[in-house]
Amino acid sequence: MAVHYCDICRRTSFSGRRHLYSAGHRRRLREALAELQEAVAAARAAAGGEAAAALRPYDPAEHGRRVWCLVCGRGVQRDGRSGGMALLQAGLLRHLAGPDHRRETARFWREQRAEAALRERVLVSAEEYERFARGLERALEEHRRQEEERIQQMAAGIREAERRQRETVRDALQVGEPGPARQNRDASRDAEQPNPSGTQTGPDINWMESGQALTFIGHQEMEGKGNVHTGAKPPWLTEEEEEGSVREIGPSYEEFLKQKEKQKLKKLPAERVGANFDHTCQTGESWLPSFGRVWNHGRRWQSRHQFRTESGEKKKNR
Image 1 (cartoon, rainbow, N blue to C red):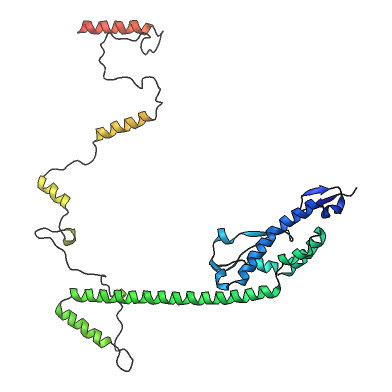
Image 2 (cartoon, rainbow, N blue to C red):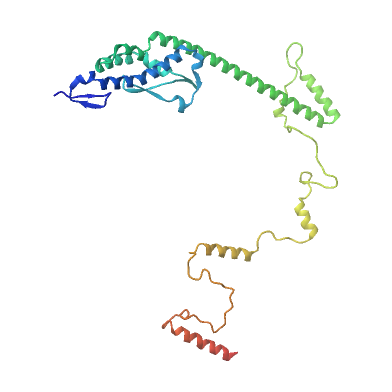
């Protein structure tokens, strides 16, 4: 018995190649070709429209997608790219009009016994693709020309803003100068203007190299008081001299040690013995835990007698 594996149905048929004529294979083949025909129809619609509408700013997430070509058995880049612009459907149209796709289509139709009427729906003629490519090239040239004009306009706007800034700085410097100096500057500027023959009589002064500040509004001084810009002492030094005492800034050394000790205690376990002990409670000398106290030799319970003996000696001495 002949065995045949069908890529469309994804199963093995024991009826051999007669499986290609079965109703189930025909139905699955039409469904698989419908997806490819839908992608081809979208590409042809883009080719039949205006080429300028096929240009978009390139977005990797949107224009990096692929279309599965059933007859070739591989993914095809849907959109093309030229610089920073995406060419919609350009990659798929180039593949559909190529000789490899046409050859694989003939093989696929022969092997799968597909309907001949559906064959032209997954192909794009070379003339159709050439017409689309020429229109796309003209749209790209127009886009480049518009971008160059936009860049030139931006450059002209920047130059105009710089010119206005230079005039503003020059006018501000003239306001801050005394009368004779201003007259000398005006005279030097008149001497540097080009003569009617087109030659310049003096060097051009560049405001960036003049060494002056951008804007000078004069010295700002308060009545009866100075500031750090005029050489006066800062207010915090003046207050110390008037008061005659130095105020301590920040915590004291004892507070620092206490805070450091608290930081060490925070690292210890919260459930340790004695962590919640109340150190403010008042206890007398007769108080003693039932388990005794800290000992260095002997048995632990003997520490109670030792403590009582020492307490009695202390009372006698008193």
